[in-house]
Amino acid sequence: MRLLIAIPVHNERKYVVPVLHKVRQYHPGDILVVDDGSTDGTSQIVADTPGILSVRHPANRGYGQSLIDAFCFAQRREYDWVITMDCDEQHEPERIPEFVRQIETDQWDLISGSRYLQSMAGDDLPPTDRRKINATLTVRINRDLKLNITDAFCGYKAHRVEAMRKIHLDVPGYAFPMQLWPQVAAANLRLTEIPVRLIYNDPNRYFGGQLDDADNRLRHYLEVYKEQMRLAFAPERQPLEPCCCAD
Image (cartoon, rainbow, N blue to C red):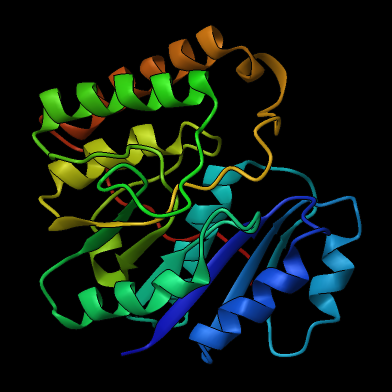
């Protein structure tokens, strides 16, 4: 089983070295950093770190695009699974062995981390607006798609690469999960959740532009979700497109 750990980064100079060091403690195999147009020196740090695979966007293209490019990279290099995790120390590398254990059962196509599946020692309290938006959209997704998930927005996931070929992903920004879940349901991918710790090191981190306003952010997510529901369950689904990422 060939496993890739993929880590999107954007201006993560503070965290990238300790995060990569800790990931290597739990995964001695391949690690991919997708640098989304960093301007704070992160790119050079990644380039100077031995044994790290990388894809770099010359300009910021969005969190969702970084994940899409990670999946493309994994497909092109013929990995079996890719685990995606953030680089701000909100996803603990200590959970990697649990993802691997679930992968090895060969029961699932998508293993999604959940910060709300069960309470864990040391859980933080997320900002009220983020918690409310996550809860609102998780309820909506479960009502429409019957997925029975508890956390719509956790980016800590394990993806079966072959299964990801069955879905079409092209939403580049933070609304990426609003496309992922309808696609997962439409393709009948096998899904489970595992608990991960709820960590908010910096509750003041921003999304950028109008998305910093919670009402605008929820409105945007719902607009994307409604459109993606229409596309995912259209009589003729969009054809899959070949990977276009640079590696």
